[in-house]
Image (cartoon, rainbow, N blue to C red; front, side, top):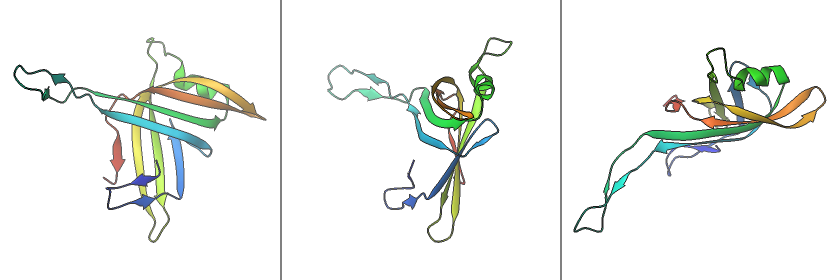
Length: 141
């Protein structure tokens, strides 16, 4: 996410941080969030233009980062005693440092799965992904 705004208003992001659960991740990369409502189409007799509507919200989020321990990763992706993977809040905090600094925070909720994709001394590199479970919020809107 490098820009925020309409086609005529662009905010260039110079600094970003990501929170997954409570810790702030200093080294997060490749954060990709996709979401939107399905647009169902129904054919109409006598017309080549289908009827369209607004369906349910669907989306996914993916991120890769250097994480602190295997145990902390497990708390995000392992099912709890109720058998459910916990819902995790992911915040991406973006600061525009051109002119007067402006901060925007995107908040996503997801149930995550993960994989360990590498190791560096004392840390693991993890990749998390999962379905978005609530409409993403941006503040200030």
